[in-house]
Image 1 (cartoon, chains in turn brown, green):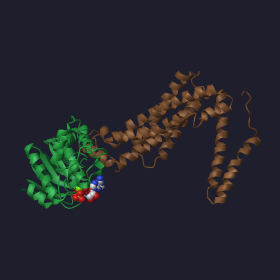
Image 2: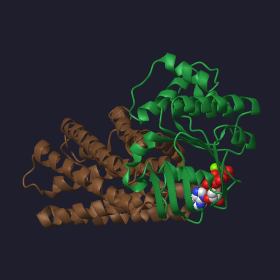
Image 3: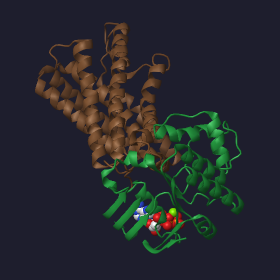
Image 4: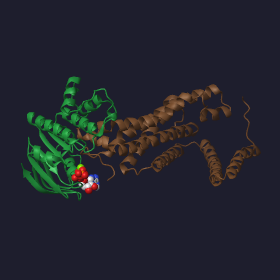
Length: 261
Length: 212
Ligand SMILES: Nc1ncnc2c1ncn2[C@@H]1O[C@H](COP(=O)(O)OP(=O)(O)OP(=O)(O)O)[C@@H](O)[C@H]1O
Ligand SMILES: [Mg+2]
């Protein structure tokens, strides 16, 4: 268990055989996807190599400034991704709320996790800070993306329900409640489901990585449990902030529904 | 009760001067697309006019809290909104929206009888026919007991006979309990038989105001 097998170059290369087989199959079937498969394999390789070197550099020269820059870059990238992934046009107000909930939701959970749960010193130790930030931000991004599409879709397709409630004297909060609850549910569900299957259906990526690199499975599992709870916290906090503020952007200060105008 | 002065909304409505009286039955008529529903939505403050003034009981609509206003001046939309659940759920949800106390089944049966809907309270409301849904939505509104009823074609999906029964009961009910009734209708018969005032709208303008 203590001797880690370092992959040699030729061993790495032999893993690309999977890609070759896949390309061969799609060619044979006449599916025009060779280019995408090729490009995505190359991109994955280059991005990971660069990240690897970047991380080596960061780990060897720990600095609060670098750590914060990386955190901000991850947040900006994830917010950009959420907005780009949305199928409908989002109002500026809603985009701001996405950014706000991502920042507050992930950063507060991140610091709680690092400083209270794991208790790292210094607080900016990149070996812990960066991968954990990545996991919290990545999972929150997936969750909030679902929440955004459910909320916006719900407001559009159930416009008549919302207005029907307003006409009878409902506050915007009551009128949107069903849609808000629904958006929250569907955004949080993937995280909850992944917790249910964990350890039985699949071994989570972080744990697998740790075990392969020589960590005892018990230690890996301790971390995995802690990080899952951290992810759950971060995802739910992000989504709660988002839906609670987000639905309000569909109403003006006269409690009127404003969409599609 | 309502008075409108130089009200404009987009290119849809342009009303110079209009007064709607308290405790009266007022019908709004006019061809399709003339702006009748838009007028009701303005009175319910679901939308606000771009220019001009609307007063409710001498108070500028913009200065009244929208939610409070809608609890006094409640509206039935042209297409009835039926929420998932039973007939009972659909009746009670209005009270929940308006933050009023729930009522017992006895009262609900009374309402169903009033709107001439012969269904059990536990029936699934999604299974109702178009006209039944319309009456259910109307029943929900009556249960709220608002001061002003804004009804957008409350009988459009009903046969003539049912229409007469419902409108007759409705008018009697509003008279008894001192309510104001403002309704859009395409039925000349309804307009002439029951209304005390008729507002005719054409291409966004009030072209005729008649006291019957
Ligand atoms: N939000 C809106 N934006 C732009 N145009 C609208 C909007 N709402 C309604 N209209 C237009 O305004 C006009 C009047 O609509 P309205 O629904 O008030 O007509 P109506 O008199 O109720 O007609 P009907 O008898 O068919 O129900 C229509 O031409 C409609 O297309
Ligand atoms: Mg209409």
